[in-house]
Image: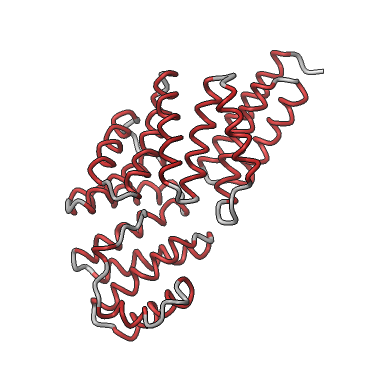
Length: 305
């Protein structure tokens, strides 16, 4: 039988290992580690530890299963952990994961509600890393609602709380802020952050995470008239999106590739790309492809909506 001190040492080591794999996008390995921690906590009869392992496993499972929908029982258990209030850390993690689940479902109002609870819990705990991630999460919801100035303020606060050394987390926030700057017309500031974020993610081997910066760069470079560079980033984003099954990103990549081709004068390629977009994502929108050839809809588009 494992002693209490032996259990805690083993349990904490599993959490560290699971989070490490999660950061490296080794999702299946991370989930297995957290589930092992969950079994260990259940065997020890430690409910607080059990909830801690569960909320960590939820974060991974959401990333894996978000395309097929997040099970209702997961929502319910996260809410129970939050409402029970038995442990401040577990409450914060539950609120953050609830917000993340609603972000995947594109229910911004509900997501923002839980994201603000997670932010407040992070403040109470004095945990700067969690506060930064909650500010980034709140800003993501504001960005999806096209509240660009408000989103910028929260992204800037998040970055101020983070170590300045390059990291995956920092790069993702820098990308978000860069896109917000672009939407406010600050293209030079935006491009600087977008290129920097992409370089960091590529250096770290974060291939899935590089999709969104590629799309953001394609959008910005189209606006700047640099169609060949835009198409290169959009093509990379399309290949990765299809590899990882990221439907929203695939849709955006097809549109941006078509825009770059159309503006560069390659109407045939543009029509082919827009037709693929129409057939795959808008089958009921007849003549959408032809419409996109003649109407500039970029000013109406928010890639994060």
